[in-house]
Image (tube, rainbow, N blue to C red; front, side, top):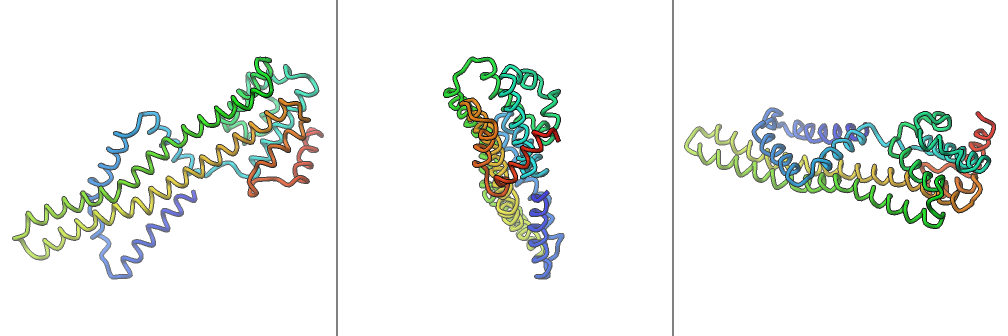
Length: 287
């Protein structure tokens, strides 16, 4: 929602300033310029992107519009879920975790923490991290390498649509110039006509340059940066899981494995040591 607010502020500022300068709003509504600029940009995006990247960009944009779900409450749910899993594995053996890993949607532990359970990528990542330990197919010191590789792969997959959007944004001023040149061509074709008509054609050509620059710096570039932050938040959430699982696989007590994850969090989502202790006590009491 913050993205829509930012776009609204940009739009209101530009239009408001234009009206304050006694400009006529309908002068900016040059639909031919919109078609040339936005249509060309979308065509270039289709040309440079595989189908999967375009779909990922669409999904990422929708997710960004909803707002990143990785707030402090989400991390608290994650840490409690990890602690409860680790406690179960410590008491009953790693095989006791199999039912939760194989069927997470019906897990009585995960169902207590809906903010985590509805994050399908995070649930999948946690289950895939625990499955080799449960099966005994891997040594604890080899687990970190596997998880690091998976995290790097996820980062690269996230950067692909962001790079496409960034390149599209960078191209917008150029497409604005294309629209302006086409407008000048139209103007030259009517150079012998009425002066007011020539003025309208010149204004339309200048609007093309204006729109290209505005869409680039006012909308697409800020959106691309927001998607970068969203990717960083997703990576931090997954890394929290990885650090905790690796610590537990190396024989750390459940509370210390969760503490390792807590210490890697940024200050805006990191619970204090006392807050963590109180959270885990409530888990231990079955609250």
